[in-house]
Image 1 (tube, each protein chain N blue to C red):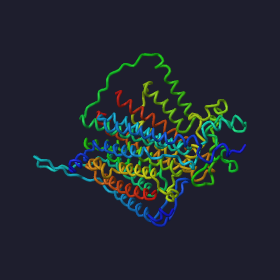
Image 2 (image 1 turned 120 degrees about the horizontal axis):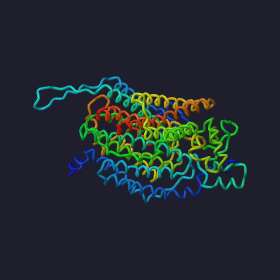
Image 3 (image 1 turned 90 degrees about the vertical axis):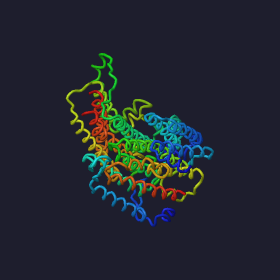
Image 4 (image 1 turned 30 degrees about the vertical axis):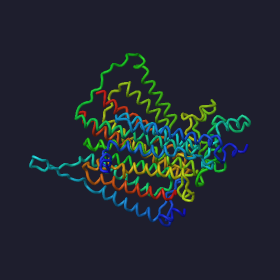
Length: 223
Length: 165
Length: 225
């Protein structure tokens, strides 16, 4: 466990589900606090009223999100918060991959019902990326399992790295970047967050931030 | 030049393509790596046909459950099935031998039906999926449920309305 | 006989020997699928081609060849299935939006007039439902759901309103909760396994069967109006 304690401080507690052991360290505790606060803030706030002005007209129109859609998005936002909590606390690689997948699909759910062709187009392409992501995430995890014989991060922290582990780590990194819609694959996120209904779509930013932070920690633990 | 590249990246349509390209690059460049399987795995599986061979020599082990036979009696602390898990738990190996009465009947009447998916809602896979790695199964069904929610919400509230419901 | 000779302590030689070959095949499969994603222009075709990429993932997982790998295949498969469900729905909605609010005209077709299609349907679906109930669990739910699906698709039921099925989807959600509860009960205290088994078995059969039925009714209302 020395690599984990080096990175994130002394481990405060374990939540054992037999083979899958979630652990809480000061680092993950801080992340969980941020996620919980942000999710509560988003879930309690009301959807925005967006004003639209048009050229050639002398009116300002206010558009709203209909109530049903707002409720659906709020549900997806809360689910995304739960998934992110799992992402930052889990101590098992396969479990980590599953939590990241859940984050991705809830992100897609927030945007699935937006009545806007551009946003839907971006959402669809984000969904395609999510589907491809199952290869780098689960494939990378399975390669690590084949190479080391375990999935538990506590055991993996003591294993020295080798070229195949490095390659699996690269795959994991690409998978997490794709799920969070980060650096070279950012275009879908940029188009998606043009949707109206402001508070809920901000969950996307938080999820990319948290997934990226956590995947870097996981890669350092493996290395 | 850089501006042109960045501009072409900013289109949602190309994102899956460059993503696929990145993965393909990593995979193809890793082809010459010496892939090998570490023999020290958790939950090892017997070699193909090994349990059949053993069963032919010895009457004690029934080969109607051939590759999935792990021994033990259901929910019996003294007679556990063989499970090599990551972290030991006091209740492991309790359900590797569990079969519903219907499955028991299917196991008894034939050589092959005992291990098919129609007849076998117990055994080592259930021990892993529902007990030692149970959180994975919860998550997996949550993902499925989320996808169902998204799909049925879009159908019920969007496409049906648009088609004049 | 000593049971430890049945299950080895290490992975047997034959699986270790096959591993590099399996990985190379998986990488080639992935390369084919990914190049398909890069080349293909049609959006719907892309969804289908991505399945090849998923197969590559399944090969990599299966190559490990332990019981754990066999158990891990199921979550991987389900995740890709779930995503295909959601993504196709988004695609359909996008196409509706792009083409404006127009009713999608499907081609008219005439079903073949066969006696069997009228008489055998109730019996077949009843058999499926009964067999699924005996099986219980996920498989049982799938079989029972297939029975309901057959009835809804071919049997032309009358008197089942849209509201009824919306309520049914609510029941299905509750059944899912029951399944989870039973599951957690087994987790926390395996001594109560019988109660947990009944809760989760009963919950999941209702859930899966109703989901199938819901899909059937949605499809029927969508296209056969």
